[in-house]
Length: 107
Image (cartoon, rainbow, N blue to C red; front, side):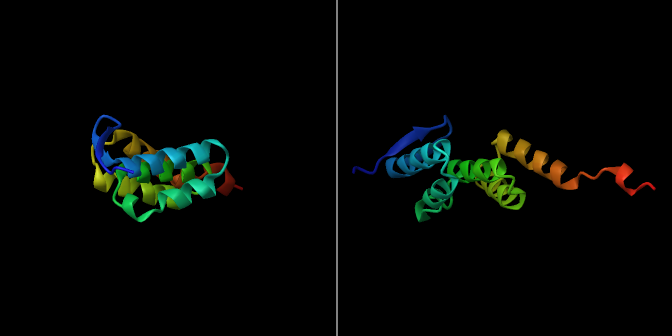
């Protein structure tokens, strides 16, 4: 396969093999195979890829695996600080983790 740069999601340039891995991972996730999707996203060429980190975060978020999702979205923001959707996910997760019901503590 020819390895060339392509435009992905309007702001990122990636090699075609990276795009193929992300597409395969998204497809696996949509088919109900999150473990397979995460395995594909763990590929070494995607470690510093904001799109792959974001998708990993979405998969963990949908499984309510808050810690892993938070780590993925924060890694995504380190790579590309302009991804406001990743920041929204971080805020949502922190809100979920910080929630407590005050009436539970009242006798």
